Amino acid sequence: MGRWKALPSGLDPTVVEFVAQLRRFKDASGLNLRELAARTGYSASSWNRYLGGRSLPPREAVEALAATVGADPTRLLARYETAQGAWGFEQAVGAAVLAEEDSPSGEVERDGAPGVPETKGGRPADGGFSIFGSVRAARLRSRLRLLLTVGVSAAAGAAITLLAVELEHPQPSGTATRPAAVARPVAYTCDYVRKGGQWYAGNSTTRKDHLEVDMSGPEVAELQCLLQRAGISPGGVDGNFGPLTESAVIKAQRTYRLGIDGQVGPQTWTALRR
Image 1 (tube, rainbow, N blue to C red):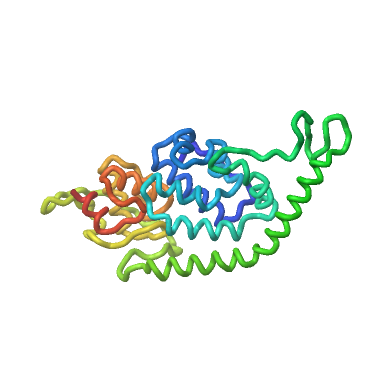
Image 2 (cartoon, rainbow, N blue to C red; image 1 turned 45 degrees about the horizontal axis):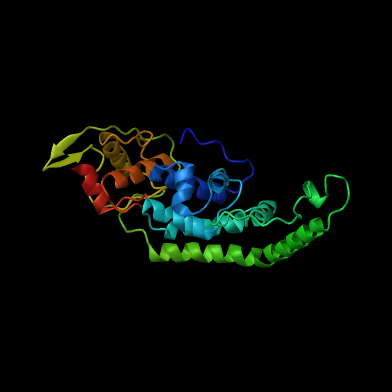
């Protein structure tokens, strides 16, 4: 979306895709950060970090966001597990340090003693060494060891989770294909005609093909035309099911009071062709 700031450079593509999905869900909710915080129990500053790609949210926050927009969390959690495995080591350490701040209660545990101003590294402002800095360092070392221990298993677990999701939700035969390299882009147009009480745009007559992100073809162009006719912009009609089209599908599903998952099936086709 145009108002979103660019994500930090150097993020793994799987992390970028996960954060992009979080942003699409946040847009679909229609809530600002304060309202989202009230609905999910996680502070606005925490969501600002999650949506800005500066730290990964806890699993419970991901589930709370999906529940807020009424979406099935299965695929979002699969992307979350993959993002966890790819999350940079230094970023993961930062997320661990901020874990207390992200708690739903909003309580923050302080390592320094009351009345002792503390600067970076646990050293007091007067230049002396603070024992509380040692406590913080010990906690960080403990977290580092934990991250090292679970790092490899987390990556393997993420791969297994994604495989399980694909096996549980196989792509039906006869649906649009994944994008393939072509010599020139296909030009699609929207030639609307109403037949038998249904709208058609001249690209496909399907009323049940399953569509989701990364698919392409005339069925996707038909979907984009129908979204456009409904007053919901998919970002253009190019036959490619990208993030803008997914965001438009989510808005349409909210408008027509359908299950919100960003994918297109018989119910979404029926609603858009009316």
